[in-house]
Image (cartoon, rainbow, N blue to C red; front, side, top):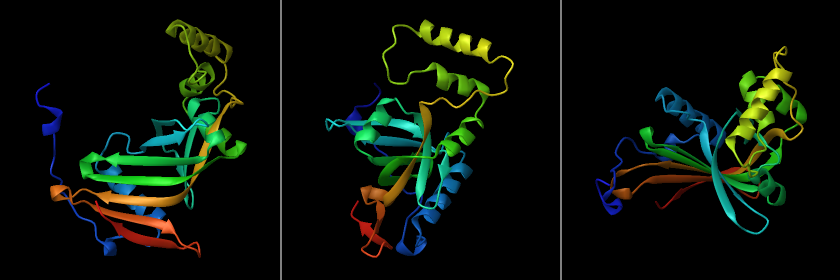
Length: 215
């Protein structure tokens, strides 16, 4: 290790964030920042850390990919038998975080996850590369497997079975979730750790209220 962890630090000075910079609509603001992340050629700017809590109260986090946006919802896809899906089944309250270090920004989101329609899931699934479709069928996500060979054998069997088909059917255990957002938080790195943070939350009239937070 070249440096002690305690000495690893970076002073953020790329930009700032003022209230007048923000759109009154958080989804519009998010799209603007996502566009900035794409323009900065950040690797997988749609990668987001999804946090869930199990029925026993145990938290878990993992990175998933944002695959769609609705009026006030984020869409991702997964195996409905996975650990994350089991968590969501028992507790649909989730948290998501985007970190775009190149442009010194984060977006933190709290919301309620629910399954997309079967039609939406099928449309997205069949837009994926065929090898990714095979992967979804082959993997019993989150379950214990004794060797990689078992996974690769399943893959080969599916490749043979669907060799003459351009796409596979949607697995019954696979589909999308949409996260209806309740809280948006936009973070811009600043010098001396005095970062800019703004939170959008819904008021009693279901309108977005914008507040600056201490860093």
